Image 1 (cartoon, helix red, strand yellow):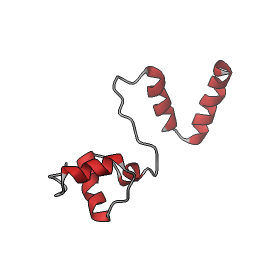
Image 2 (image 1 turned 120 degrees about the vertical axis):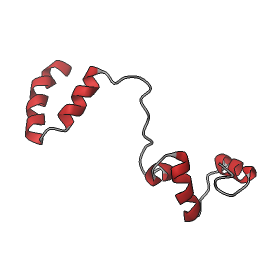
Image 3 (image 1 turned 180 degrees about the vertical axis):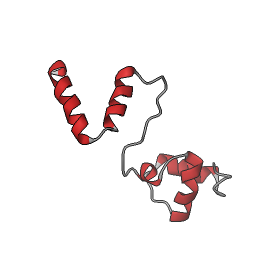
Length: 85
């Protein structure tokens, strides 16, 4: 990473140990190297986690329902709500 950023390993180690601010040119170089968004790198929103195993049926169904129009989602929620209370 130090080589890609044209800096020293000592500088990288300092960044890893200390909370610090970065110059914008360093941030723009870090984003593709780390494979994260600027928001993730800056802590604007929680980091996304990569699923290490296949997604279960419940998650797949939830994802499918979340893409439906709000009215259809509400109907599904009304049906499921008694089962999860």
